[in-house]
Image (cartoon, rainbow, N blue to C red; front, side, top):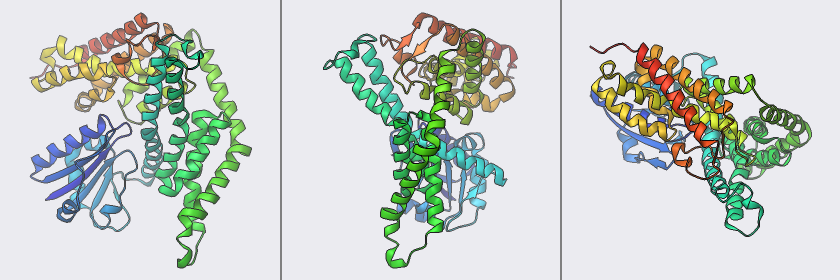
Length: 451
């Protein structure tokens, strides 16, 4: 049999390609042929052609973001998350080949209606986050380069530091509108982009921040969906719906709601959260850092991990270094580093293949790509996941104790040499090393010898 598949994760860095590789290996072992289109951070690669569609017997969508399904209408199709493809690629292929053709509906990998609904909301959020992250990373790095000239160097106009701050700040300014716009796009397709982005811009204007943009995106998307169902026009006027009626009515509604109803309360919540974060000290800081660490290692790139990352990214949206973002990155670097360390000090507890993968995890951990730990966690979750959670909790807590700050939302060790990008750099490196050692040693103790 011949299958086609699409894989796409929110960041488009690791899970996308790991899922593609898992599907390719599984299909080969099962005697099937498969072509996998990856929609990663660099765009679509290995794109499925019309010829591929004509020859395909089934379609697999292993995606955590919204992708275009129109080209697959009328084909047997199953949809799942990228983690499902990584963990059970053969089961996914079997389900796809057993699926029935459908013009509109997709055969969901999940079983219950509650799970489907939860997956849908998560997918909308992750679609927005996936489009937002490049703006956050670009803006954060450019602001960090500005700080390299001195924390206050950008105060002097018409200088390079000032220009870098302007460019980075502009990218940050688009973060919330992009988030809101693409959440709405995921819910309502193209008609959702206009009200979503306008709602996000208003969230910036009324200073309700990341939380306001998130709410605006969902309101915009579901408003468009309801308007589509409520408004029925004669066929000769249907062309007015996407270009006039839907964008005008939905944008008006979202704008009024954000300005007169939700803007003020959400701003108060946002301000209260920031004040609480800025006022934390002692036990509260340690606890928050530990919780962030546990979240980053709990599912290593899944919804819990992404929630912690989005929270950290939101705290640097003001253009200032963040202790929370520092804890997030430190905790996210630990799982692959801990595994790499364990494969070195306990070679008799890992297969030859795992030891080779451990070497790769040195680079992945250093680059803040937590997903490198997934194959090890999937193979032995009872021992691996708790060990990594403990190590990440130590790293996150120590980072907060040391008051380390981070001005960029990604980059791993590659941003550490940038002057002023990391506050209290020596102790920040100690936090990462300590978490990696704790996680690695605990994993080494718990793992059993391989026969």
